[in-house]
Amino acid sequence: MTKPKILIPIPIQDSGNRRYTLGKNYVLSVIEAGGVPILLPTSVDSGALRETYLDVDGILLTGGDDVDPAFFDEEKHPTTDGIDIERDEVEMQLTRWAVEDDKPLFGICRGIQVMNVALGGTLIQDIPSQVTTQLTHAGHYEGARRDEVLHNVCCDPNTKLANVVGYGEIGVNSFHHQAVKRVADDLVVTARSSDDIIEAFEMPNKRLILGVQWHPEEMSFGRPDMMRLFKTLVDASAR
Ligand code: MN
Image (cartoon, rainbow, N blue to C red; front, side, top):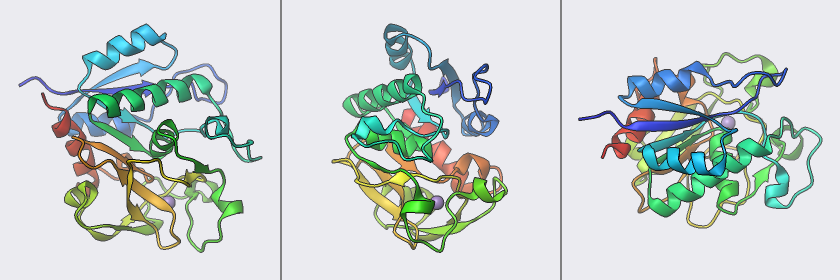
């Protein structure tokens, strides 16, 4: 059987704005899970995006900078950073196509956020200044290790997420200062942290439309439950 092809958009997101960049562990996790990563620069035109989308079996949306709040009709918060409209538009288009066509889609960190905005939801633009919490979500502000458990999330039973990682509490890393606020219609929240921040959602009755707020790719080689998230994407994408 041919291996499922998983599209991963690559944006320009280095500080000098000179290079397309993508975390290595997204690519390695897809390969380890049995898929073939297809890396596509976000600068392609809509025709090339559509052709590539039609040619792949599944989609992975990765972490990165903040979604333009204009897409959910809010003014930009002072901390909202790194806006890349080209990337926003490509990833929102892929989300809408995937939902329409029931093509498997897995979003990580920024990925869950851009999926929510694409489908009509909104975001908390800055957890540290807008939410009262004892937990550390923005671990990158505090020099956390990429695979360090910073807080637990509680996964609801009888969900696709719980089928993959188990239900109840699991420990996760956390490198986000934004989060899902109003969840788009048709998406169901499947995990929250103890301060009520949304940490995962999915769309029932689809092969796989799933997002998580943490970074499983940074834990997947030491945590079988995190690797199973990538296996779930690849297996759902098999023709
Ligand atoms: Mn978190």
